[in-house]
Image (tube, rainbow, N blue to C red; front, side):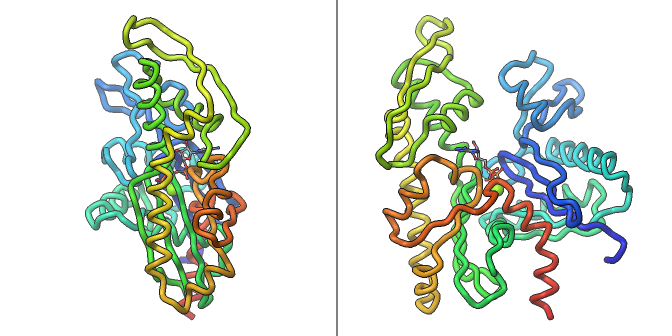
Length: 331
Ligand SMILES: Nc1ncnc2c1ncn2[C@@H]1O[C@H](COP(=O)(O)OP(=O)(O)OP(=O)(O)O)[C@@H](O)[C@H]1O
Ligand SMILES: [Mg+2]
């Protein structure tokens, strides 16, 4: 192990982050790839590819190779990992094979886990360790996961929501649902189509979400103009929408997340339940940044809720730091 670097990869549905034990976050890019449809070559990835979303000619496809937290397109994911390793090697000036820790959703099947492990192995890792995403999130959020107390983490990503209660280094109770920020974007697209006969793209929908989406809490109404294609005339059209409309369009989806949190808390052993009341739960993942979400949760589940210091980075930091914990726990 000595003389070899360890890197942690958060291979997320929406974002890929790489954490180096000595240097911190060394890569942070959207999980988007531009592929040449004739040759299947990866032309660009990350921000560069995301910029091209919905705007490319027929010979370039913009692909998001991970869906619902797992690999949907194995070849493109491998191509993406290759590009990432190439970039890391170039910037780090290192050609030593790294030990790699990769996060996987706790609901991933063994076939899905295998696919992730194979893809990372194939791009030249010395060893690959898979780690459940909520455990990584908890470590990355600085929770004392090795102590015998209830560490409760809710990680809302692009494709999945993972809820876990961790005590003494292990998962005591967990739930994983394939609902996340991407599904909120879809709800918004559906709403605008139904209500205004207007077709908007994923990028527009995500922007609307970040600007206007609120959990079901009272707030000062906001409005924004959005552009899309009128489904009746086929022409470009602009409409003004309000945060109240978006709020009701996404409410049912947020209720599903809440229900999963409730269920996990109910499955918690009685001895640890008291801890949750005292210590509360910690939110990680980009989906937790929906405005008013934290306040809404406090109101609905009546336990303290804290936002992780860097919610979008918790999992990556946790994967990178996890080896220290493994060593500590095994002592
Ligand atoms: N300010 C914000 N408000 C609302 N949503 C946001 C905000 N910032 C990011 N998001 C959403 O968070 C999601 C991405 O979060 P994150 O990077 O944690 O997901 P991921 O780890 O890639 O996905 P998964 O864990 O499901 O594989 C996206 O759906 C994105 O639109
Ligand atoms: Mg994630």
